[in-house]
Image (cartoon, rainbow, N blue to C red; front, side, top):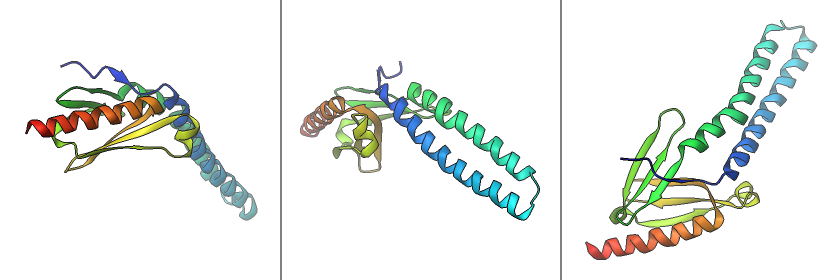
Length: 158
């Protein structure tokens, strides 16, 4: 079976890079505190070097590598009987959500998602909630209406 065809918005890359930049910035603040304490108390220099190397790796992974891989992996497709959802960073998971199992569909938007005009859609079943992140606002709204109407039709068939 082929992978789902639809991808999330390309603006998700910018959003995830901002998230990576914020978390790296917090790490840099901790590293600055360690360097100041190292100078104040004459601690050995090697912990500061290790922290600097870790921050450099965090910067490479969280700002550049992981958002690109994540964007490439997340795909979805809504069909009449099911939702095909593929996600995962290094281990790619693929989930089929039957329309008869969908209980409700929500869209979510935090401040950063709103800034990039993106929304996350949550598909609730009895067992769990599946989230398709970083869709264009209009795409998320259309998808929510489409899934809710298909789920209603699927319920009527049962």
